[in-house]
Length: 346
Image (cartoon, rainbow, N blue to C red; front, side):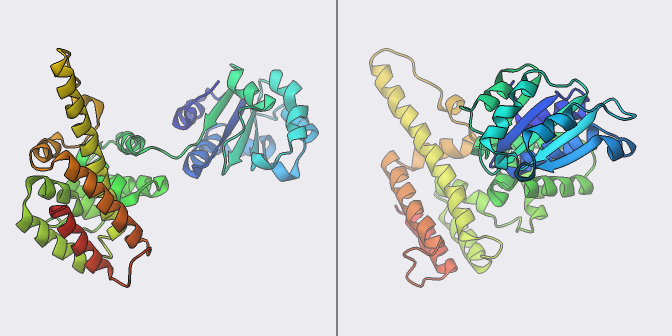
């Protein structure tokens, strides 16, 4: 049966782990969470001495795995056999495992951790994990942008915190897809506030050491409102502190804003066409998920669709420059100032 990584972790920690597991993919954080759950929840420290076996795919064969898996637990209800680096287990060994995969021991949890790439779903053994009710198959894939925001909100909830949408978006933009760092920062926030506290943007800014008065997450609003004075003041501050406000992160924040704005504008354009035909359109804010609709509503009045498209081209250009491509020796602070002026008048 296929299951999401964190759902598998929950299943393991609640004591309902299946006798067979295959977890694999490029997102190492999820694989670490699954492995930690197995090591911390299946056996007590005393039981591990006789009932925990950790082997590596490059060093073991099917016969050895089956022999261990069929061994009875000693002074415990379960035996845990953890196969790390399962991607190194040879294809012929997987085939030899098939009889056991079809009839696993109920007293053993046999878990394969397949790192750095997705298990091949076309293989017979992988299909066995997906199709069997006694098995769990979990893909540890890098998360989408919206998935990261949902992950932050969910992880905050587990830490008895309530992240509002702006705070979750800001943490995602600042830390990217580094899930381990995200979890670490949420745990740090938890230690500094009462349980059940609502976390707003200002707290995230304090956590990562940014200025409350000047921060890049206000820049889209200044552009939408055509607030040139505030935009230029913020730009000058960020340009003097590029170690805290790196250009690649700013470009990412703005690219997110303009790409969603273009999608919203496209829906409005399509709605106008449908209305001429006597048909109803779609609410763009039900289709496109944004953390602050007010900013986009303001932008719809001040930024034409062709200017949005042009702004995205400008951001692609400065994304390359921020990474040292076609930079022509310009400093990061100079590039930041150029970028903001071009976005003001695309």
